[in-house]
Image (cartoon, rainbow, N blue to C red; front, side):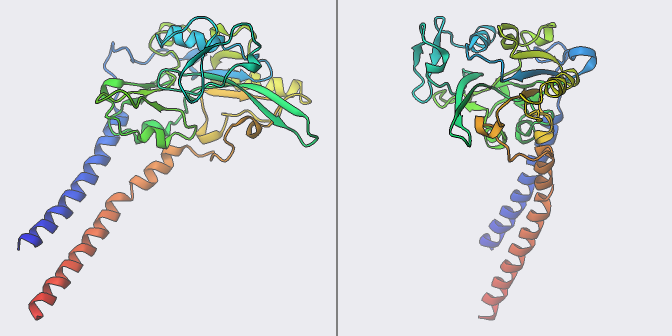
Length: 320
């Protein structure tokens, strides 16, 4: 009898846990911040459009002014001018007067929310082609990270940016698994306090006050342009059509995973510059809920199966 009760309790708790997980995820994802909170929604850019940034890779010179502006605006660890967070070791090295092409590579980290690196690739004729590429959170229009976060630590504001609320985070790191661009970074040395780091689109300290992101404002060459998404898409298509011999007929982020707030145009194929090209056009949360919605049915089937097996074993014991 104790064994039978234990099985029943196990099945009941499994079903209840799955139901609570689904309910909590749905409630958390839909929950809005309280009025007046730091992450309260702000007016969107340019006539109600989603705030976005157009990145023209043909104009980027790799100066990393955007990186330094990001660190300053978001109170991230700063170093002297020209100091760089290198890939791997996490140490800082000073670029000095060397050209950006010789600077060490950067990697996104919980306290480094944007990185600029030189990507090189040889074409079919053996000629080396290279471009500097800025990397940060893409701020998906329908973010997968938000859909999987069970406590709404990641939240998509009504204005558009996807922000992180550290006070809610439980350190499950589902966002790191779900992100199609491998952006969120975890602070492994934070002890019992989980910390995820990613670009906030300068939402709390600039966007909600009517300013664009610091990185776009700091760019000296116009490689970064802030504005409404529809306007930027129009401009991107105009640049491509005006110079078809230069630009590829593709705006990265226009359709990938349902669209993103960061848009890229380039004269070199994106896959040669490290961009993912095997991404679906369908928003990933739609796929997430397709799976989650099947959980109750799966639990019910497993519960019935376990009950049948338990009943069969019990009858076998009685016949013996």
